[in-house]
Amino acid sequence: MTGKLTNRTIVVTGATKGIGREACLALAREGANVVATGRDKKGGLETAALVSDLGGACLYLPHDIRKEDDWCNVFAKVTERFGAPHGLVNNAGIFFVKPLADTTEEDFDNIYSINVEGTFLGVRRAFQSFAASKTQGAIVNVSSLMGQVGFPNAIAYCATKGAITAMTKTAALEGAAMAPKVRVNSLHPGVIWTPMITGIFGDDKALSDAFAADTPLKMIGLPEYMADAITFLISDDSAYVTGAELTADGGRGAD
Amino acid sequence: MQKSDSERELAGKVAIITGASRGIGKAVAAKFARNGARVVLTGRNAEAGVATAKEIADDGLDAIFVKADQGSEADWTAVLAYTQGAFGRVDILVANAGISNNVPTARMELAQFRDLNRVNLKGPFLGLKHCVAAMRRHGEGGSVVLMSSIVGMVGVPGYIHYSAAKGGLRLMAKAAALELGAEKIRVNSIHPGMIRTDMTAAFDQTVLASRIPLGKFGEAEDIANAALFLASDRGKFVTGIQLVVDGGWTVQ
Image (tube, rainbow over all chains, first blue to last red):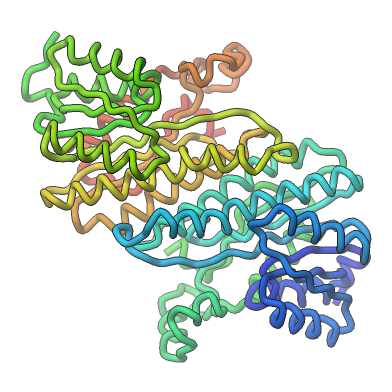
């Protein structure tokens, strides 16, 4: 712990498990006050307890990122507890694999409202908060390797992640023109061994070995690696980085 | 001058072009028709759409207009029914329709974001789904062009909703290319830069042109040429690409 985020408050969505939870732990290790949000109260409280075990300050807030009122409530509660936030990790999202012919309009609307509108609402609320509190803020939008390259039977998911990749660039330009400046970057995880994956394919050693074998670095992607990348993009270590796509995928995208 | 059959690259093909009443869509529809395709133009403005289809048909070419909102699934069902009834098949989709306006992110209403993406992002998804189903009926493959933008690749302040749509289309095309390749259905995206159309009429061309390596705005015809390449057999080994037609804007 080098304390590079001491006295900073960072909001992490989808922090009830997986990458979001690990991000909370990594940010807390650097001294940040972390706000773990999400729909699953039990998971959120577990994340908060794990951060407390590290000696960090963590607040869990229930949060459906599709709802504007929830965003207002989260930012109000954060400000009340820790003061205005310095960073937002737009991590919450859902995965979805289905052939085109079976993907209904309802399927599309559902994943779009969470992954795309949820991210938009977060960027908007953070911009408003940073401007009002005159905070030099940072935003990390968690896209995906599938927001950079295609994947079969994932037309809807790829569309939402491509949307996040491109929104990040426009947000970065708008943030660069703010005073103080706000940086916005996207993170592109490859296959990461989280409940998002194991929930669909099962937590199977043979499968994780197969994914590792299929990855140039011959490693399985762990949420800790994403947490390190998020910490970099949120902290001043990336002071000259904005509008960038940080791919952390063990080399899959280069293959 | 009527082209010879050998130059009619889309002879025997049926193409659906959305947002075809004017601008880029109109140029694509006219070019496809001149190259032998039977074209179905769609759009929300019936008066303009009918006039454009008539202009093309007056040259002795096959063109019909169907009033349709790209973001409406019911309208897509109707478009496909009209197309099957009139021409019996579908080979090409150019999902071109799109709307745009400038609002800074901090002041954008969710409704503004959603309305744009219903047309610009969900619309092409619905079109892709319905047209691919029609292409599968004859089993001879097809070509889908999703009209993205350079805004799907680089940022433009005030356009976060448009960025979402155009970035979404870029990846939608790639995912679809992988899923549909085995059926010889090719899916690509085109990324127009600054093109002289109604959508860009309010932009300051003098200032913006100075930022374009080729020194000027493009014409709708430039995009139609790219669409013809991707739709025709000349592009038969091309799928999942992002064809950028921007006078060099994004290479700097």
